[in-house]
Length: 315
Image 1 (tube, rainbow, N blue to C red):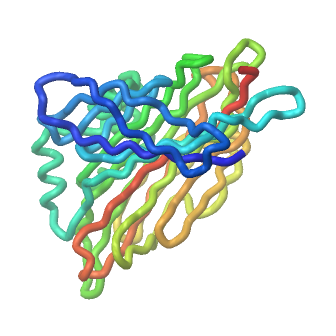
Image 2: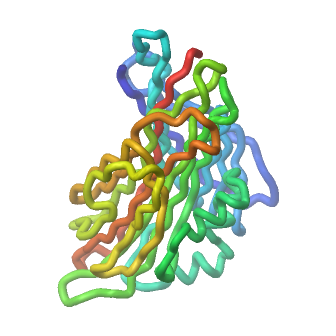
C-alpha cells in the first residue's frame, strides 16, 4: 500500500465567529490511488486570533497556532488480510509556525493570550477528564517549564464507528538554561485512544503513535524519554522524564505489546502496537518528551507534531 500526503495551509482571519472556508488540497503525483484527504469544513479563530480551530470531515478537529499547516498522510486503498479485514494507516501532522527563541518572550505572549493546553483540548473535542489529563498528566512530579505553544488533534473517525478514537496534544516549552556554545529547547507529545470490535462493525486499533520533529539549523536532540523500546507492563504506569537540561516528569500507561521508539538527531517517535477492541475501557497510550541543543547562530527552533494510527475493519 502506498501512502499519500495532502497538505492544507490555513490562516485564520480575525473574525468574531466561525466562517466556512474552502481548502486547496493537492494530492501527491501518483494518480493510481486516491489519497486520504479529509475536507476542511470550517475554521474558527481562538484566543483573540492567536490560535485556530479547524474542523474536517471524518470527525477530525485540529487546534493549533494561527497559520499552522495540517498535513494528512494515508491512502484510501487498504491492505486486505486473509480473513477479509481491511487495514488502513492514517497520520495527521501539525506544522506549528510558533517557534521558541533565545528569550522568554514567546512564553509570555502565550500566557497573555489566555492560552492553555486544557482549553486547546476542550476546543478540539476532548472530554473534560481527557483535557485535564493532557494539561496535567497523571503522576506529574515536577512543575512544567513555561509553555510557548500547544495544540491538539481529535481524530474520532465517524465512519463506520464513531466510538473509535486516537487523539493527542503537544507542548513546546521555553528553556532558560544556556551555556557559552549553545541554548536549548524542549517539548512533549502525547496520544491515546481505543478500538472497538470488528465483528460488530467497529474498528480494531492496531497501532498508535506520537511523534515530534525538530526544525532549526544545527538542532540536535540530546535527551529523549523514552529513549529505547519498551516492553508492555499490563498497562502499568511508565514515567516519561527529562533531567539533563530540563526537569520534566509525568506518567502514562504502558500497555501490553509495548512501544517502539525512534530517536535520531531531529525526530523522536513513540509507537504503541498490539490490539485494542474494547472501547474506552481498553484505552492505549503513547507519549514522549525531548530536549534539543542549538548553536547561538540559530535564533529560533520549531517543533512539528504528528499522530498516527492503524486500524482494521470489515468495512
